Image 1 (cartoon, rainbow, N blue to C red):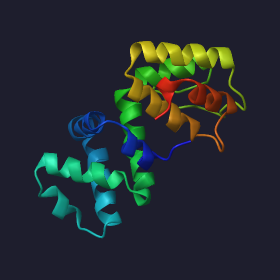
Image 2 (cartoon, rainbow, N blue to C red):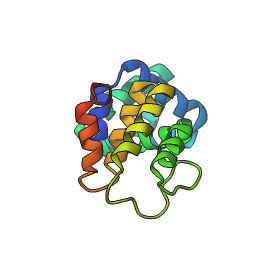
Image 3 (cartoon, rainbow, N blue to C red):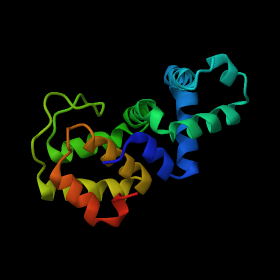
Length: 166
């Protein structure tokens, strides 16, 4: 199970840029929050970063999200992006597994103790048909972190399918 800062280390620069361009354009408050948290994490005033051109801001943010000390902030950025920009992928996955959700991609109630291997495989295959491989990998790794120790079934699938590991 990868921490979010490691996910940022392993995904393409192109996807990292897409995530932050989405946050900057569509989720302005989340963008500002991530920027402020990262600045505070580095003992800087947010205005110091905000004065930089947008491309420099985003580059600085991506670089800092790769640091171990920024793992929780990286979680926040990825979760907002997934829940807002990729909610159809999340909803499809949760529906396939029969996990209750709010219709927006957030799980409601308790997560199951076990995942049905056949349903899981089918759900992941459908995700890979409809969405970019990197996006699917990010979601599966974050989903895995929603439960202490994750799920053995998902660990096995990630370990056995080269499309799912970073």
